[in-house]
Image (cartoon, rainbow, N blue to C red; front, side, top):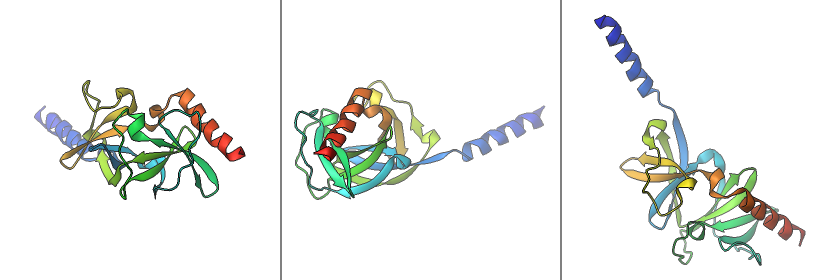
Length: 174
């Protein structure tokens, strides 16, 4: 009987060692660290001229031309209802795929690509971050720091996705 318990504990330890590890692009918005799955990120670009789109949502900064494609750009500070700040040399646009649509996310700075084991991501606590919990898929532990892991597909509602899509389509036709 003792041998069976020892083997069970050994298998449990082996299972813990073989945790699934996912990669996240980490970035900063208003002194908080965030992460998005690296597979959702198409590229990271420096600030580039953004063409404003009249009558769009306040968090939609405008559109950019990305190698011939019109891509809507969202100021994540505005999206999360945070205080605005001037863009500087660290401000970047992270191009992500949201439900089949390319969207640029303006963030304060990009940090790194981090490997986070699935066991190091905890469910969202009830009182966390300055942003809506519906956008958060968990809290990841990166070294000694915490990063809010965003659920890219939930940051924008279906109506907002349609707005972003029509914003890029309308601008492309103009």
